[in-house]
Image: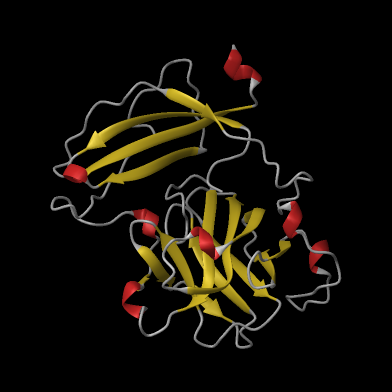
Length: 277
């Protein structure tokens, strides 16, 4: 959910070693993302996960499908109806999606109804947001909200408060910080997470963290990873290459030699025709 559908992106790469030595940026290349065939009616919910009317998960007396700040959808695992509500006035809930827990190879956490993903647009870059996830049934008392990252595995997300009836959880997220998967302050928050439990035999595989896994970490050398901070404007683009606030950096850790590859991706153009000039 980080990249937009049917959009032209430009990218380049450079290398940073464990002493912060940096190579020059590579030449700029581009790619075009596919069209969104899962959401033909463009309402922000995959067509095969849409829910009919008649539900009021937040119990405010209004059909959830009629609330602009609410997205209702069915989980792909666990036969549960989920709802995500934008609580803060400064955000727009753009899209939601249920993902199967089978997409994660690490099965040390038992996910009750898969992973939950959503994308928010904020009216101010770097601001925080509050979102509540509702469930059509109670979750277990020992269930927690987990996030997953390939480099750090499962983590308990500490900025989550469950309701007393265990049928909702409220999250605090920060653009470019806690809970934001793209790791960049760009006015967009992408959050994949899920409700799960851990048995005693696999509890050591799960850590507790108050920060997003995408915010960096690890020391250089010895294959321990590296911490990278790169400005979106730290290298000049060609004169013909426009830049917008929707700039993404994709960080790829290369374990061999303790090197990190920094991908700097910009999404300047909507539509295909301009790229063909």
